[in-house]
Image (cartoon, rainbow, N blue to C red; front, side, top):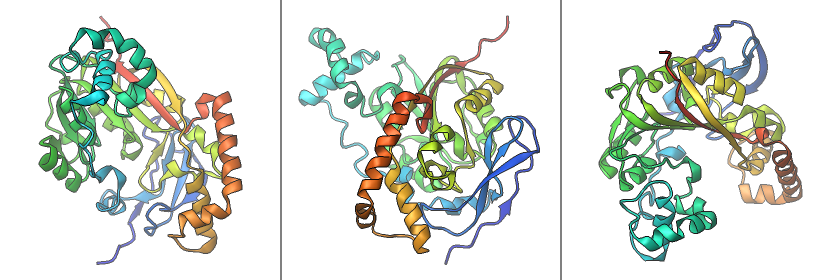
Amino acid sequence: MGFIEATLETVEVCPLCGGTDAEFLTETKDRLHGLPGTFALVSCHRCSLVRLSPRPTAESLPHYYPDEDYYSYQVEDADSHLERHGVKWFIRSSVLLGLGYEKISKGPLKRLLSPFLSLMFFGRATYGYGKRLPRFVEGGRALDVGCGSGKFLNLLKFLGWEVKGIEMSMTAAETARSKFGIQVFSGELAACPFEKESFDFINISHVIEHLRNPVEDMKVIAGLLKPTGVMYVETPNILGAVNADGLQYWFPTDSPRHLFLFSPKVLREVLTSVGLAVDNILFSHVEFAEWEYLYKLEEAEGKLDLNLRGAIHKLRHAVRMRKLRNRLLYFFNKSRGNTIQCWIRPAARPE
């Protein structure tokens, strides 16, 4: 059966401030998978939250997450790096010791070398997660919202956490259950069966932009965090769209899967509105110049699936200059990095 074009809905009211006036920013379409449909990004006049409107209805949206192609549903070699022997493990476990993973990092030599090895190998030793990998909590419970096929949860489980997941895709959720033995809930957030204030760590990485109502949904998620818990949120930073030739070509726009786009200020307002306090915000820059040039080429040609290497090779000088410009912009203004990384805790309750 072929793809049926989405039924669309207009989002008349901003979920953050309740405003109804919005400014049209750009027309968008599915550039990543080439599925049909035309959508639009608008910015709320009152609070500046950017939303997709019109957008696919709840019934239509799952068609834009193809199970065989969507990146977070893949599981190839998801556990091939989980080993506890050799020099690599000695370095890795020594670094993890500094994050409280003492049960898997025993030995006076590791304790002695941990600060030095952390300086040298922190990013790689933390399986590429860096500061996103949580400090260990004895008997700790971790939740990954939008866990995909369970790769991150499987790592936390390996490191000693009790883990649970929430995932929209029933196919990906079943993969996490069958391959890694992880309990994953698939359904509406409001119906999730997990107890309130029961998790020490909640990971929401590149998920909040997919939520149909980020304020109401984040209120549910916030209620699952222990008063002493930590939450990590990562999402595209719309201020980073300055790196692209127009918001419609910016890779993290990812229409129509990304229903909202946030600036640091707006993200902080969303989190504050649901009873959370932001401890720290950082920015990172991932280079998407090749993709953005490819999107423009595909639009000019009127078709998808141009040969990426061949097309970009012809524009290698332009891409190289764009990357240099982007690095300079990020160097002088970190807030223009295209990803927001946010560490959060429950706000202090009044006595």
